[in-house]
Structure formats: C-alpha cells, structure tokens
Amino acid sequence: MRRAILAALAAALLGAVPEAGSADAGSGQYYEVVGVEGEDMLKLRAGPGIGFKIILGLPNGTILRIHGCEQTGGTRWCKVSLKQSRKLKGYASWAYLREM
Image (cartoon, rainbow, N blue to C red; front, side, top):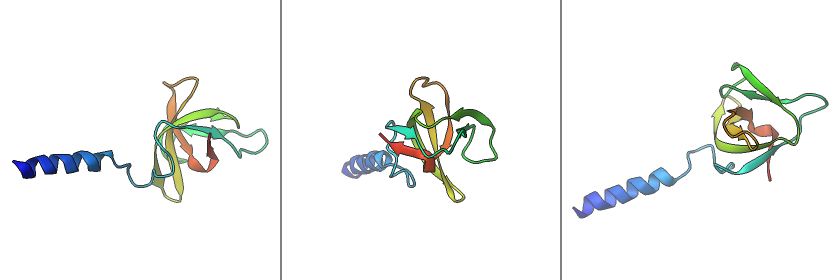
C-alpha cells in the first residue's frame, strides 16, 4: 500500500515538471513580439513550422501568451494566443518573442 502511494506521488510530481524544451518559456506568461524588420510581420502559423498555413501577421509590440514550446528542426516554436483575443491561437518562432 505504501509503495502504491509513493508511486502515485512520484507520478504526480513528475507530471508537474515542465517538458524538455520549454524551460525558457513559462506557460501562461506574456511575451512581446520584437525584432521584426521594417514593414514585415511575425507569422502566426497553424502548426510548428514554416510549412504550416499562415493565420495572421503580428507586428512588433503584439502581446502574446505562451502555452508551451517545442523544437522543430533548428527552430523553437511556441504555441501562443493573443492577449486581446485569447481564442485565437497558433505557433510563432521563439526568436521573435521577449518576456515582459
């Protein structure tokens, strides 16, 4: 019985540890789009990679909430939602996000 309780506690604690690859981006924290040059915009995509459909262009200064990040190839992609429109979600490159 004691082993079962300890195993359940260990499983619960391990489940609370953030997944690998998301240590730099806490889920639910706000980030600002930065570093987009000129009149260009950061692409909010339907999935984690440039092969996915573009949902929306995000100018510098757009505030996003990160829901988790993952590495795809050489790019880290974060699942995000807009602060002003939380139901609108997609993926953005981590390289253009700065913690607020």
